[in-house]
Image 1 (cartoon, one colour):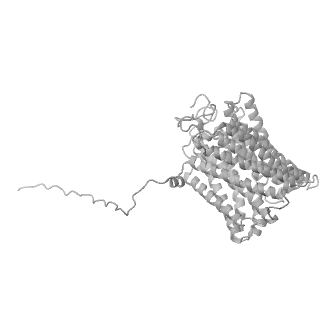
Image 2 (cartoon, helix red, strand yellow):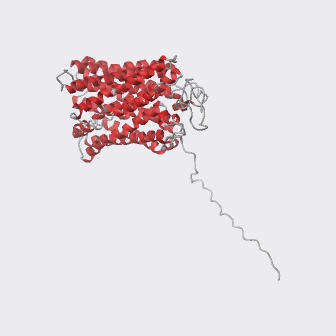
Image 3 (cartoon, one colour):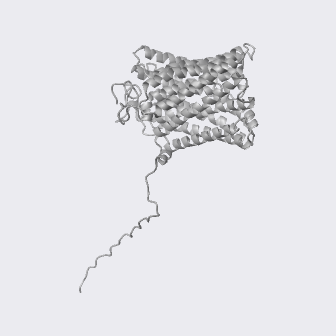
Amino acid sequence: MTMTDTSPAVETAPAVEQPGPGINRATEPTAFERLVGSGDHRLIGRVFILCSLVFLAAGAVVSALVDANTASDGSIFSSEVAQRLLMNEQVGLLLLGVLPLLLGIAIAVVPTQVGSPAVAFPRAAAASLWTWLGSALVFIVTVAADGSYGGGHLKAARLGNVAVGALMVALCLAAVCVAVTVLSLRPAGLGLDRVPFFAFSMLVTASILVLTIPASLAHVVVGHISRADGSALATSTFSGGVDWLFQPPAVFMLFIPVLGILADVVATAVGDRQRFRGLVLSLIGVAGLASYGAWAQGTVAQSTLLWAGFVLLAGLPLLGVGAAVADTLGRGKPKFMSPLAFVALALPIALIGAGIGAFRVVNSIGKGTLGDFNLAAVSLAQFRVVLGAAVIAALGGIFYWGRQIFGASLPEAAGKGLAGVVALGIALWGIPWLVVGLSNTDSNAFAAIAAVGAAIIVLVALGTLGAAVGPRRGGESDSADPWGGGGTLEWSDGPLAGPIESAYPVLDGKDAS
C-alpha cells in the first residue's frame, strides 16, 4: 500500500480592499476633538478657569452698568430692566463666575495634591464642564434677549430658567468628582487628616454644594413645569427658591476654599509646617457646617435665633484660621510671593463679609427696631464682599498653582500688582452699599463708587486671563516647585514610590517618602 502525504490547504486571508480616492482614511483627531473628548483633569480645570474668568468679567460689566444706572437716577435702563439685570447678575456671578472658578482650580490641582494621576470619574468631569459651558452661553443669550428671571419674553424667560437648572446640575457633578477624588484616590498612608488644606477644604465645599444646590434646583424645576412666565419666575422661583443662595448662611460656603488656599499658601511661603494642623482642619469643617443654608429659605427662617447663630458662627473659622496662619508666619521668614499677597488681602475682606452678618443679626433680633437699616442694600453689600473674598483667594490660587494648571508659572510681577488692585476693587464694589444700608442715605454717589469698583474687577479678571494665556518664560523645564518650599505632593518631582509616611501631609520640605 502506498501512502502519500498531502499538505493541508493553506487558508489565505482575503485581500483588504484599499480605499478609493473618494473614501476618507482614518485621520488623527483634531485639536478641537482632543479638547472636547479629553478626560485630562488639568485640561478640564484649565477650561473651567479661563471661561469663568471671562464670565466673571462679563458679570462685573453688568454690575457696573446697574450701579451706574442707579447713580444716574435710571437714565441708562428702566427700573424693570435694572431689576432684571440685578437678579441675573447675582446668578451669573455665582454660577458662572466664582463657583466654577474654584471648582476648576480644584479639578486641576486636587488630584495631584492627593497623589492621584487623574480626577475621579474623568468623563463625568468633562461632561460637567461642557454642560456648564453650554448652559452658561444659553443663560447669557436669554438674559440679552429679555429673558430669564424678570424677563418679558416668555420663551426666553423659561429657557433662562432651564439654563440655570442645567448650571446647577453641572456644578454638582463637578463637585462630586472633586469630593470622590479626595475620598477614594489617596495613596496608602495619606489619611483625610493629612491631606493638604486646599484638598480638604474642597471636600467640605463639594459636600455642602451637593447638599445645598439641589434644594434650589427643586424650585427651578417647579418653575419650569408650572410654565411660569418671566414675572412669575422672578416672584416665585427666584425670590423664593434661588435668592437664598446669595444670602447667609448659604453664601458663606465661599469662605471654605478661602481658608484652604490661605493655609496652603502660608505654609509654602514660610517653608514650615502648620503647627495647629488639626485645629485648622476642624475649623474648615466648622465653616462647612455654618454655611449649610438649605433650611434657611425665606424671610421667616431668616428671622430666627437659629439663623442668627449660624450667621455669627461663620466668623469663628475665619478668626481661628487667621490666628493659626499668623502663628506660622511669625515662626519663619515668609517669602513675599504673589499668592501670599492675594490671601493676605482675602482674609480681611472675608472678615468684613462675616461682620456684616452681625448687623443683619441685630436687625433681625430687633425686628428692624434696633437700627434703621436698608436690608436690601446691606444684603447686596454682604453678597459682594463675600463673593469678592472668594475671587481674591481664587486668583491667588491661580498664581500659586500656575505651574500645575498651565504648565508654567504665571508672572510674579503681574500677580503682586493685581493683588492690591483687586482688593481695592472689591472694597469699592461692596462697602459703599454697606454704608447706604446702615445709614439709609441717598445711594447715588455711593452707587457711582461701586460702579468704579466693578470696573476694576473687570480689568483684574481680564489681566489674570492675559497672564494665564499669554506668553511666559519657561515651560516644561520649570522647576516642579517654583516656590522652593512646597510641602505637599503637587510639588514633588515624580510619582509616588511607596506609602506616605511623613508627618506633614506628604513632603517634609526636605525629604519625601
